[in-house]
Amino acid sequence: MKIAILYGGKSGEHEVSLVSASSIIRAIPEALHSIVAIGIAKDGTWYLQGDDLVKKVRSDANAHLSIVRDESKRVSVVPGGGPKGAFTAGGKPLPVDVAFPVLHGTFGEDGTIQGLFEMADVPYVGGGVLASSVSMDKEKTKIVWQAAGLPVVPFVAIKRGDWKNAERRTAAIAKAERELSWPMFVKPACAGSSVGAAKASDRKELETRAAEAFAWDDKILIEPFIPAREIECSVTGNDDPVAYTPGEIIPTHEFYDYEAKYTDPDGASLRIPADIDEGETRKVRQMAVDAYKSLDVSGLSRVDFFIDKRNGALYLNEINTIPGFTSISMFPKMCGASGLPYADLVMRLVDLALERHDARNALRTSRE
Image 1: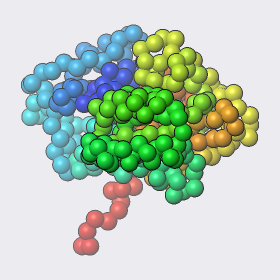
Image 2: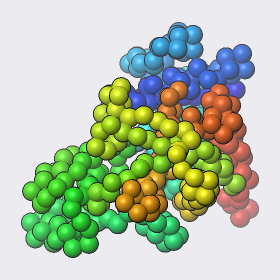
Image 3: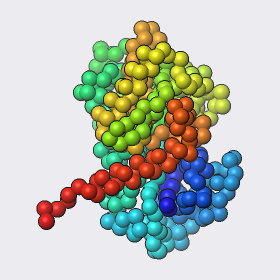
Image 4: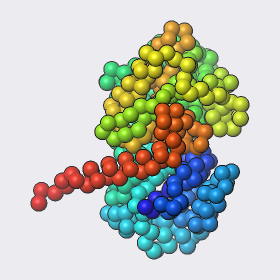
């Protein structure tokens, strides 16, 4: 197959994507499949990358993808073009069999690029438009989970327009103080990797943290700060999803922030399997599948949980439909702990993409 790897993107997680995509490219058997590397610059422009870059990444475990901006190799997408005709580079056809968007955060796992692939009729790895967009919005995710009877941390959502209005801002803060408890946690509703997330101990600090979070999104969430263990669980599949061995993040920072995840080499340790008993493990895995299915996710996701250290209560935190995919990321490591090695996992996701595409193409779109 010709597998298009899309990476970079117009996102605060651009750099993380370069590392994830490099790991995926190394896992795809060179003797069986060819790679079409499409780098998406920070301004959102798509560029076809040279075969020499792909060869370098495949041969050097320490090499990472970059993005060469060659205007003669700008990539365009043609609606309805299908796998053989949807992509063009420099005006010439760029046939691919399946697209693998290794794009974390905005314009990658929020339904936008998924909608583009649907219009182009190209098979793609991961969840569909609805699942991706709802899962990206932490408020809407929580609303769906609440409707499904799944436990979530209490929250108050505030939109930018309400925050800019002094009267409505005061009312929103009063609601948070009435329904939640100090300290509180503030985060953008639709951003990943903990960008813009911070703890607030009083009203003044809450206002400061909220302003910082609004730099990343037009809506924020306020939650009570829970002293919690952070448990994660990988899930793959379409109609019959499978949950894997749960793992635990043990941050050295106060919480698992962006620096702990990506810039501080001692920011956190990973424990797989998580140090929870058999009953809790079963509960986490079942709840991960329930959370996945309630959002109509397909392909893959990492479902994140909190276990309250004070009373052992288990809460769903959030879901990531294109989780970190580096060789040391939790998602592939948890799959590996259940007997699915990294390379097999990558090709399993490609198979699921093709399966989903075939199933959708079998649906009727005309009465004729």
